[in-house]
Length: 367
Ligand SMILES: NC(=O)c1ccc[n+]([C@@H]2O[C@H](COP(=O)([O-])OP(=O)(O)OC[C@H]3O[C@@H](n4cnc5c(N)ncnc54)[C@H](O)[C@@H]3O)[C@@H](O)[C@H]2O)c1
Image 1 (cartoon, helix red, strand yellow):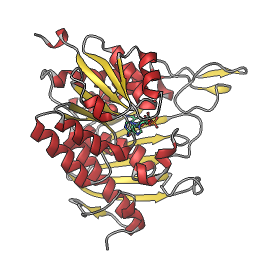
Image 2: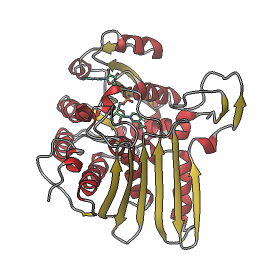
Image 3: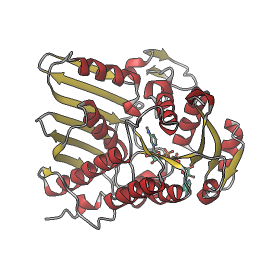
Image 4: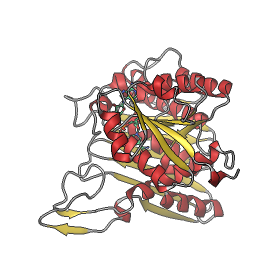
């Protein structure tokens, strides 16, 4: 049987924002993947989601989903604190696992997820879609051809007006603020772009600038990641930028540079006095000047990521983003919070034990 002859059968955990992207991504690669079930604990949500996306089965407990023999791989699109327990249960049930970012809350959880999946002989895939975003993939192809010479600086920024669901703002459920939520993308991006080098140190400045009433988490941060050959990654994370999602990179080498704006750069500069249906993720209005994006999921790389993960399950491609990648990002997140607390850079390896959630390292850094 060839890869294209059998679709990978997916069960989605969660039924809201990212779950919709996952379902749409599967529909975009119908020869490779198919969503056969969805699970979400809120009454009616999974059933409504299943109806909306023509998914045959829905459940209200992830253990029921894991007991479904039709499901080969689960895709965890639930709040961060649930990633590890659900992934470990899935491994025990013999299901492959895709986990949305960030991998989990703690490094102990990352270890346990990786161990459980390895022991069960199932894949643990880390859904970092920026590795598949076509514009960023093109930038990396040029870099790998040598277009920019030796790259010494990679910047990534992800900024918007703040998350859509309450749990992101509750650090007990999210593990931290904008760095956990958005910085994890930039850290992964810089590391991947530079060819996955060892990370030497991390420095981060964090603050809660605009949302002190709503969260104990940081809503604004700049994180500097130093790699072993001296190249530097700069990651900007913000929950304080109205006007819709902003995701940009800049790459600098001794022979050239490139700039890419994932959303506004792929949009139609538009003026409308009356407005229209939808412009871009987290844009509050469609009146006045806006940047409506087209093929939003494709620009993010969601269908391309789905296709790659399906092929990994069929054994025709090797994962470019797995649990180990998620664990590397997680260690940088730990170091970033500790650095912000200490007011200095933190050297890696950095594996303090017994931390309940990354943001605790900001509030009470190890001395
Ligand atoms: N790759 C990306 O670009 C991207 C974008 C958005 C979110 N995410 C990640 O995806 C995950 C989900 O985020 P979201 O934006 O969809 O959040 P959301 O609040 O929109 O949806 C969360 C879903 O999880 C469900 N849920 C809660 N408890 C559950 C449980 N015990 N079992 C199963 N489901 C449960 C909720 O009912 C809801 O359907 C987060 O980890 C987030 O960081 C990734």
